[in-house]
Amino acid sequence: MPKSSVKATSNWRRKLHEVIYEADTPSGKLFDIILLVVIIFSVILVLLESVPALGSRYAEEFIMAEWCITIFFTIEYVLRIISINKPTKYIFSFYGIIDFLSTIPLYLTFLLPGGYNALLAVRSLRLLRVFRILKITRFIGEADKLSRAIRSSLPKILVFLFAVIVISIIMGTLMYLVEGADSGFVSIPVSIYWCIVTLTTVGFGDIAPVTPLGQFLATIIMIMGYGIIAVPTGIVSAEYSTGGNEKPPTPPETLPETDPNYRHVNTQVCQNCLAKKHQDSAIYCHKCGYSLDD
Image (cartoon, rainbow, N blue to C red; front, side):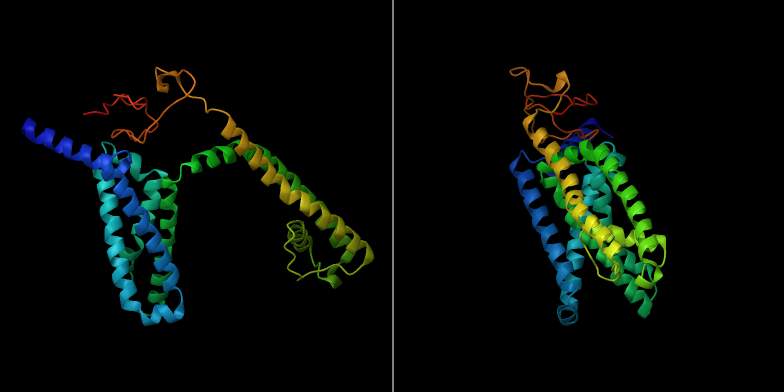
């Protein structure tokens, strides 16, 4: 292939990459807005289609709209793959998997034979379209901060949940001994189920203690439930607020020359490895060294 053709192809892919993966240019912003509108519209379409009166009356309209949306997302998915140097980086990423799940349901219906059971399967497959709502997360900057807070809180929350499980086993066993099968506590697993339902303040009411001692234990469990609900929320909230006041640690090579403590980043994404958070004046990717300006 002539060098001019290779260069033209490279420039075309570069421009396509800037439109799809970045939001600094007018075309990139416009693409993100269109994509966001289509995602919201498609999710609303799924919700309305589940309403029996609307689903039966406007069945053909729903199908036509769904095909238009599916084709749009298919084109977007293919363009995202061909606009980067390493397609597997995107295909097996979180967003790549979500985009794939958002696109395939309508195509899978062709693989099913006719018949009533197949129609039920088709309907369940099409419900996978709700995964499109997860595509919106790429537009939410605060999602990274919340994700960091949850990851930082995970060890503490796991320890706390382990303590809750221990309490549920102990209290559930006590209730089994106190109440017995006559009150509905027919086994220890059922008693543990009741204890968890009571601790979380759900209270289905399918099982209830009748003896004074059992009611006393239930009262203690209910009071503990209020504190148990508040603890995980407090842990995540504390990590979230702390993360907002502290600057995230960054490697020296990502810091701008004018400020040694603050990293000013843009939305530029490396075409080779999909790395983000580059300096405004960056020429090469800080992760793989690939040129950002070719």
